[in-house]
Image 1: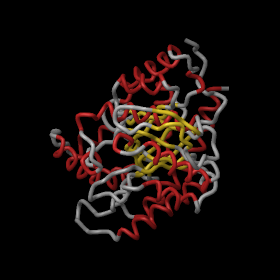
Image 2: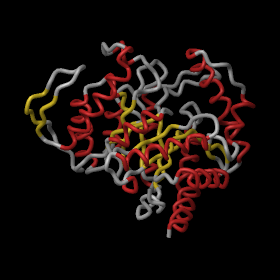
Image 3: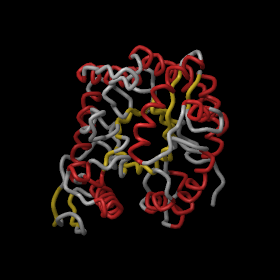
Image 4: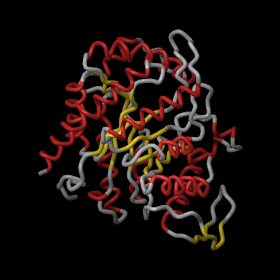
Length: 358
């Protein structure tokens, strides 16, 4: 396979994603007004756009502690307040949704934003949407595979004929509206299975890999598998972007960033871990992830720059997206963190990667 730098003609992209937690403080249980949480979110997206960041993505969750069960609605509100930033999900839980409605919603978002919509399809990190919308968890894998292939087809043809196992067939019907972009980007979110990487590659779709714990270098084989599979299925891997999505938080003082971020991270990680049967993690253990070879991008701008470049040397990816902080953190600190990402981190990373690829 070719050894040239992938997508070297395109600038390296930096974005943010947010799961839109309610902002209720897990340390004090102080409840935040959901109206204020949404207002804060839109202000953060607007700032990211003003700073020239490339993308902002919102999660889809159907749990009490989140406000984003309908992320496309929030993205549409953001589209009306922004000019350039690309707007995506992280992720759309495609397995428990109708691909036709997903496509129509994002096509509408694409019209509102004048061609800035992206779909990031995934199976989701929680399972509440399956019983909520009447799906059986035993079909977890089959649902996603079938619906992803239908969604991909919807973007390629105005009228389609289709049949599958889990959805009623479509016989020569038009799908409207059509988006500004042709095609509208569909990313596949991958949590860490080689089969998922091969699926995305076999369809020629961009892959976003979530690295939220452990040693990121161990995920390098997934990128190699993706690129090799893309060639096998007749696609040029040099034209398909890949993304790393990880957690982080930036302040000018690294210790302040650590002291602000990790108490919340510990509380939330152990809440989820208890549901899933994970062993409890303490703050000291979690803080190991902010070291250069770990998964978290927590620290001052220089530390975050070093780490993004370190991972770029491993993965040669085209986009990095940070799940920044936690909405329980004071809003002005969140805004400051975004400002540092856009003004201190992004320009240096873009310039250095462009230099390495010149």
